[in-house]
Image (cartoon, rainbow over all chains, first blue to last red; front, top):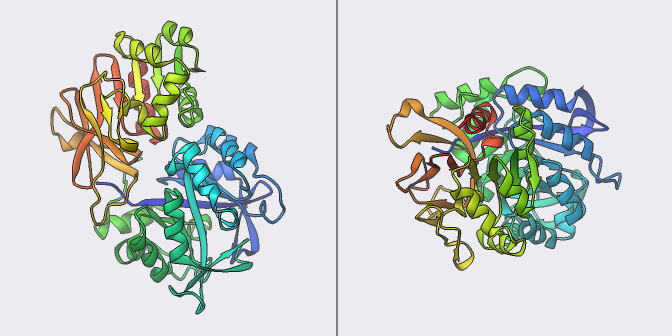
Amino acid sequence: MLTKRIIPCLDVIKGRVTKGVKFKNNIDLGDPIEMAIRYSEGGADELVFYDITASAEHRPIDIGMVEAVARAVRIPFAVGGGISSLADMERVILAGAEKVSVNSLAVRNPVVIAEGAKAFGAQCVVLGMDPVKSGKCPSGYEITTCGFRELTGMDAVEWAKRAVDLGAGEIVVNSVDADGTRGGFELEITKLIADAVSVPVVASGGAGNPEHFVTVFNDAHADAAIVAGMIHTGDYTIADIKSAMRSAGIPTRMSW
Amino acid sequence: MTAIVDYRAGNLTSVRLAFAAIGEAAAVTDDPAVISAADRVVFPGVGAAKSAMENLKRTGLIDSVRSAALSGRPFLGICLGMQILFEHSEEDGGVDTLGVFKGRVRRFPDRAGFKIPEIGWNQVHEKATGNDGQMKEFYFVHSYYAEIVPETVGVSEYAGVEFTAMVKRGRLWACQFHPEKSGRVGLALLKEWLAC
């Protein structure tokens, strides 16, 4: 049976992993390569790296880091942040990443999803989205860009469907409201999107304990879930999450 | 020397780095002469079967890849590289492929609760023994699958379909999953192939 994936997320600023709440008050957590190795050996099913200030600083993603990760780990990883063209996507993939996550760029220029899918295959193109609760959109969720700073007026579910039509192979739903709170995933928007699209959906934002993963897989139909603060700080391990999943009867990879 | 065939079908970096991690300096090449002379040939691939076949034709690699697969030398097809070894793929309206293995490649059926592509770690069990104790998990990314054929040695299951996860004929091996991205289990398989 296909197992549900646990994906540690490493937010990187200037070559260091950091963690903040709602993209603010970031604290230093360590070296991205050392952390990638530790999580890979600790049971991570995949990794994701976001160069979180690249977009705002209008600079390309740190390719040296992507190459170093590719040399260091033998599990799949995605990279996002500062991807502003097809050429950027190609650099990341040739550096050894399996997937490229596009977010603000895809909102500004949706055709990049189609171009990326045609050039590298849909499985390489991940749409990251940062929805926030909003009365202005039919689904009740509006897409934000640039690290939650800008509202777009776009409905989250409509955007997800359109992205899949364009060729996105996977969608990461990162709830602005839940991000960094450790109060649990935002189940409503995760389920709305998981049920609306044919491709896998990754829940993101808000994980605080292992039971939150059981809930997001059982109740919100996520195919994978992102974990960050709760393991970065050492409060829990990936094995803790997987043990809870196994106890709840959720398929998970237990040997690594 | 181990040659990794470069036919512009996806990223070869992970495959090269995985071999490097087990001490094998594999060469990425699109030169038919290098492929013909190589002791071992790796035929990777991600993306779509039709454009991959077009790339193979355009780069003049069809004959050298087919010959290498049939040569008795160690040959390893990975993911799309495995699918192309079969006779035909349904992808993009259908395309005839290399025909090294009899059998067809089909799209997973649309079934409630099963997303396409299948992305993630899935179990593979040995077909010959049906022994669940031999089950291992590998990383898969695919929307199409090869049907089970007499040479199938590893079987996996998704969307209600049992499919070929791994096929072997002598030293010709091919797998649907990505051993280069399947952690220790994947590296162990690559080592086993290097020793075959």
